[in-house]
Image (cartoon, rainbow, N blue to C red):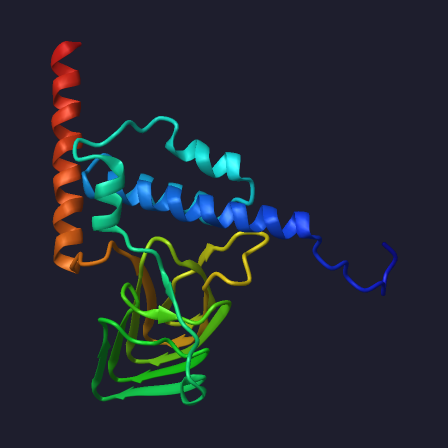
Length: 239
């Protein structure tokens, strides 16, 4: 293709492959979340596999993430339904296409079931904002969140099944960089894009299972760390 030629429209075969990859992705991430909930995967390995599942386009490569994991005691289907619901999509009403929220010398805490607008702006100045999106309803396609944190913090909690792209600039602060987006995303699947600026503040994103509290996540990490240390001690005794 020469420079200036218009991009080729996706063929029905291409669209079918993208859709099959998305269906495989959702099923595999649900199974991985199942194993994580039963402590069969530690936090780092769980996040690594979810990232691979979100960024891969080949259904076979996504399916291979389960190849070394066996069945769970309670049965994979029942446990998956109980632990990880599918990311819910819903068309946002016209008045919810854009929304702005400000935490100035105060705080914002949004969670539970809520409809995410197509575009959102979050500003935290000497304050904090926490957005829990694990039970939220997303419009299909791209959702853009523009964030600004000045001497404040913004924390976003997402479910494992949500594709996320996050990048920004930090001046004497921190801005988490995340890229969990497939090369050819399904246009009907939600995609969260977070971008912006932090100055002497922080913008962070964390992935947690639905219903899992921050304290519960820390306790899980401690349990897994203790289990790893016990395994190391047993291995040392056998040597």
